[in-house]
Amino acid sequence: MQTHMRQEINEIPEAAARLLDGSAKALAEAGKALREKDPAFLVTIARGSSDHAATFIKYAIELTAGRPVASLGPSLASIYGADIKLGGGAAIAISQSGKSPDIVSMADAATKSGAVSIALTNTLPSPIAEVSSHAIDINAGPELAVAATKSFVNSIVAGLALLSEWVGDDALKAAVRALPEHFEKAVKLDWSAFAAELGEAESLYMLGRGPALAIASEAALKFKETSNMHAEAYSAAEVLHGPVALVGPRFPVLTFAARDAAEASVSDIADSLGAKGALAFATSDRVKTARKLPFVATGHPLTDSLALILPFYGFVEAWSRSRGLNPDAPVALKKVTETI
Picture (tube, rainbow, N blue to C red):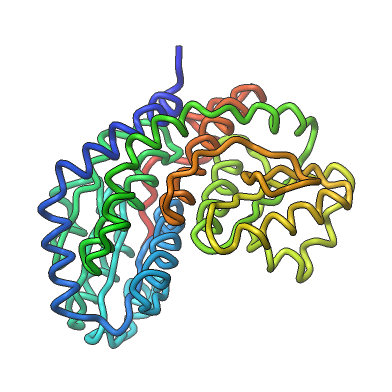
């Protein structure tokens, strides 16, 4: 019998299609609000996997709309009661449950400060929807596994769809519409070659740049959640500023490379680590020393980065089971974490 996590990974293509169909009106309205506001900046409000989704959306907005985006610590409102001046900007809050007190508190503060606040949530109605200017149902459907998969992907799909509506980017709109088809292919990719080489490794690095850095961060979290295995995410450039000291023979390094402006440099770094004897794998045809992992090229740099997480999810679910663990019920974790 398949785990809930595997079932939910398999559902990602359908969930993405459900989002694009069911939330089209809400996305268009929120996009219009951003055009009318013309924000000088944006902030994101999230934790955990949702914060990794927010990081992806940050890069997408900065690359496409040219507006700076910063992550706000939710405790600024819930613990410190700080008066953050957000009247000239917009805020995107991401919460699957829609009820974590600190996320809701910060979203409420952003709305009251005059920001156009947009909630991306898998639960409507919910407290976060009530305190935000616009609420978008990410339509991932019930997610029973503790480790988020389809809700993470749909949060980013919603963010990309919102961005395309805001800036009127027809190429991005087309790429987002094509995602369910690309996801169908990506979810079937086999990364068992990486699993076969991990052996008794106790730690590994995940690398990426730009939007793919958010994917690396999500991948590292999933290793910790499902496999009790230490994993750290770094920018492929940042890893050279210190962390590379730990990379020796057969140290595992998984590099998420998309078909974008960073692919050449990221691939070169993966190759340089492979030349040091690291167990280096990368999602690029450019690598020579590192080993190639299969990927789906979507034809757009942003959606190309997002599609990389699907084969990883399939890999880590299988890896968790191979270690005698239950990826549906990670030790010491629960599905909804409510922090103040």
